[in-house]
Image (cartoon, rainbow, N blue to C red):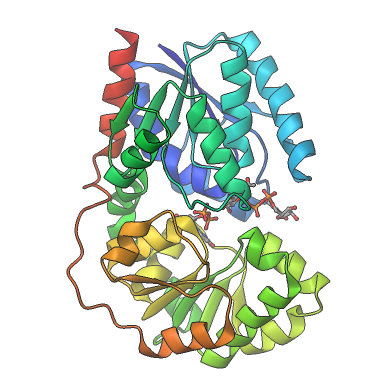
Length: 351
Ligand code: UD1
Ligand code: UDP
């Protein structure tokens, strides 16, 4: 089969690495990078570290408002589909690149496979929730990381083409955990007892009051290291919060995947609004405080390893000082065999 894979943002590079390797054993894969993320440390670094094949097409779309960015991707991907005539289009997660890829293919009657199908926060104000719901409803293969995701789809009337495969981020994590442990990043940064934080969700960065409360809380904890997403750096500067944040929090540029796994594994606690980082914290057994009101990864909360605190100063600081998971973790996100399961499902489709 000829598979056209569309990626564009940091978490998608990580997710596609194990799947791409499996698919290429049996199929032809054409890789399209929309250019949604373009800084070296948000893009090229991951292709190098994870040995992802060079994209066959880089659309170079870059940043923009939702409509402008998604529209430009839609037009660009459509051209590639018409030129390449794939049998299947594969997308990951919930970004604007995901929706643009799925929509371009569906309109041209090219079947769509969605990795990380069925995730829901049930908050339609999140751009990611819109992207997920729409993508799932035009997908032919819905590759779900968890039972919860399968159930979410069932409630929306989607049962055909649904497969429980496990989570590909677990595959990537297990494959790289050992190499990551040898990373010199902790020694280089002189880190011993520290909390790791990431913030980039639009609901937190684009509201100066929320961003200020989060930064004040992280600053008061006194031991926070924060690899800073470019969106967050920009919004901190726009809100006049950057210099103070820099004085009180160890702000560092975004790090590569291996360094990130090492920073996560070595942290006494993780504070985040990232989807992927919540899961990695769970798999690594690091207590996670999620600075959001909702999560798609409900199992991490149900098992007592993640707590939702929103952007409230007292809730963040209170949780950071007291949160102590007690229960066993499970392999609810799979055992690192999701890429193989996904390749098998896709293979069956071609038979
Ligand atoms: C996007 C996804 C989000 C995902 C995140 C992963 C959407 C709607 N959002 O959010 O779901 O969790 O990626 O990291 O698709 N920028 C740079 N350099 C880059 C990339 C971005 O400077 O390489 C800055 C630009 O100012 C840009 C801003 O970050 O306007 C936001 O980038 P964008 O891709 O629109 O959204 P993210 O916040 O990265
Ligand atoms: N990540 C990374 N370097 C960083 C921050 C995050 O490699 O500086 C990794 C992280 O380990 C996880 C993924 O990026 O695998 C999560 O991506 P992000 O938080 O950007 O997006 P989300 O998962 O929220 O969509």
